[in-house]
Image (cartoon, rainbow, N blue to C red; front, side, top):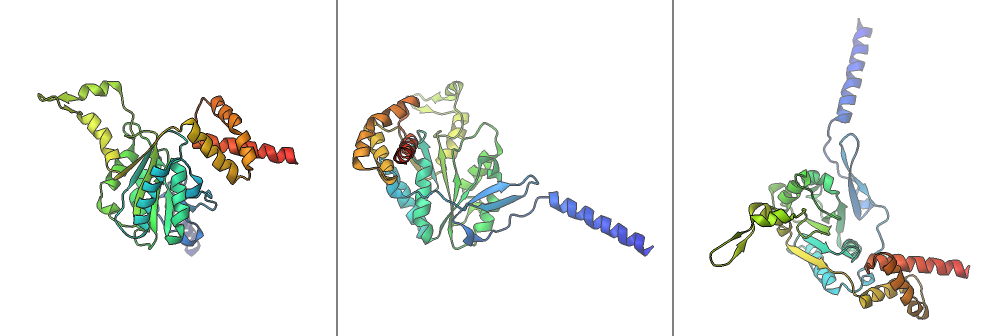
Length: 294
């Protein structure tokens, strides 16, 4: 009888272990000394974990050219944040490849010695933001919750979760967390022509958006600071090319000789003169130069 009971208890214990393995678990704090940047990931079991980013892109503020106004605004806000002064959640919007994400990474590298940390969260996981904030709320470091290329379709759950956090719910009321998001959309949601019909006109000529439009605007308005990025002119693009070529070891003569090829490179990519295209051209050119020298 005792052997049968022992076998039954062992089976029950195994069953309980299997059930616990698939049940959602509270988010546990990682070893914060391992990295300055973290990535929130959901396991197949539904458990969320904070994974250290071992190799953060070695981007500095000096590396970023022709976005001085945007750089000054984000740097000022970030400096206020790490120094314990009031600061805003930030939405960086505009043309692709103009430095939105790079600017956030450069700020992280600049202020990491002062305790700045970053947690990257995909939009699909924004519903877990309260859990993430709970884990870091008592930490001495300052945390940027980073959402890259953020946009929503109608009805996505992450939209309301982010809106609640930005609106200052009890779960989000902690002075050591800000949200920095990048997007190609100013209002983060798709906008349709038929929605213009919801606008109303008053007798004195004023125009007021309808409820649908107001709802779409309301999320972006919860970001205290908007920073806009614009396509580069030809001269600005060539300045960025020169900066990246110089950083990769090109001589002044090589930089001057590369102007025509840099413009052709952008033209072959649909005429997009962005910082990303400039960086890609510079890497290609310097890689070929090494091959020629070898």
